[in-house]
Image (tube, rainbow, N blue to C red):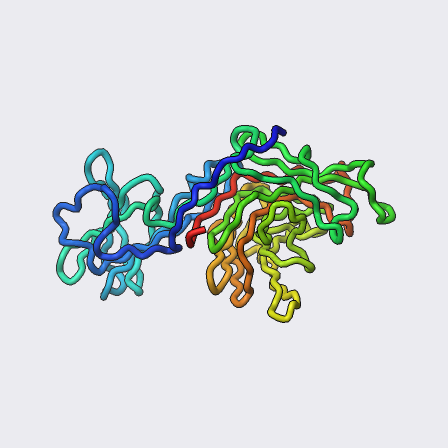
Length: 365
């Protein structure tokens, strides 16, 4: 693989679930024409992290999800979502509010929309564009051109959890729009564990510093019993070798369980004020978010001020409050081979494929 090219990250601040006030959006856009204003209509926007499937897809295809709330109404109130197309407004959907006076919708990030409803006897329209009013994309890595767009660095596993395995850039290949990570045997890697052999693996972190954010990756995990796929956050510093384990703090966005390839975990480990490591890691119930089907799925975490919300294909699977994670953090992806498991290259089930990694900024980095 060629040496990664450095590209400055585009920094932009935004707020998760931005509420658009009655004055409408800022910037140049289409006129509202016949409607009084947008008073009483609130729009909230967030990343739509729902993109399971068998083949690679652009990260932008996931789009945005939104919610329109209308003041003072209950169930059954009409809300129309309109899109600006070829110089005019066109209806994309006509929706009925739930008992709390809200409707849900999906929007792309490159068009103007408006939510139209009757409020206090007047027809009103609240204008918005998801790409401007929603959380802004701070980092997006598509793995397209046989090299990294951002600066990812290959790092070794920590000595206390990877004595028989070391990172090797040759165990990562960008191919057909995905980053393929693998594990292989290597007689030159020393292994002190009786009956086991040395091996190399694909293990990368991105050279970036993240604060509060939504971090997502579209991944196809392998189902090998002697390896474990990981997507995580760790304290920033791309030369730091650690991964999220019982001895290090960080956020496990998603990871297969060593020895149980059809199990998936999410969670967080953090140091409390006394210096003791706290742990909150949960296995994802299969009825909660089916994923072990050989397809790509989107694994994400909303890293908020007071909680961490873990999702699979947009479905919440774990929420942790009180698990304080120090920032800045950085992103890691790896296919690891724990010392505690025997690794048989002939029986392992393929590679870990990373289609894209994307970060939506919730505060100014």
